[in-house]
Length: 274
Image (cartoon, rainbow, N blue to C red; front, side):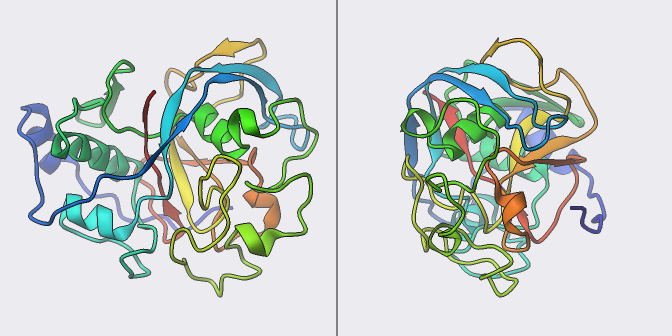
């Protein structure tokens, strides 16, 4: 599904500040986000649902942390001193953020809590220091592994994936997800549905979530710590939203757009190295 394109805003204003190493702190206090530890392991990413974009391949994941919820408007506003969301509410997920906005947020959040920044930004080129303990976006492999429940979920080859939290059935969508069938075409408070096997909320539905990766075809051979293509023009986002039907809430469903893209159904959650 595609959405109307937003006007792209220049990045230069915040890039200079970040690159010279001066932390940019908002005036409002911010609570440290709750991060869930995900045990590493091997799983078969993708499904047989779409053998082109979701080609099944083996991936080894090292341990990592991922936020319990999507980044809320309360946290985003406390860090960034602004709230771009179309749907307003402190406990609603932030929406209408670009991939660049999410990267900026991660760097400033890291500085707020005394962590090294995960990203170096030069113009529109973003380099990820993979050894940094700072906040960052999850990779697409990490996101899918977490959405499927990690080692607590289904790590094997699957012909069809359901939404996050589903145990082989799509019948209890209303218990786990905000989707087109029950959302009233709006976002809802995080943690207002049941979590998946790892205790993560809204991995399917509410808002789409940006990932680190450039979009490309999946590799054919087994990989370790897959971080996506080395370059590209579009970044991946995952999970479906309040606006989408159940098929687009599947844990293996992929969608992508240019990193400046914004939509009222698009937000993000954060990760850290384990």
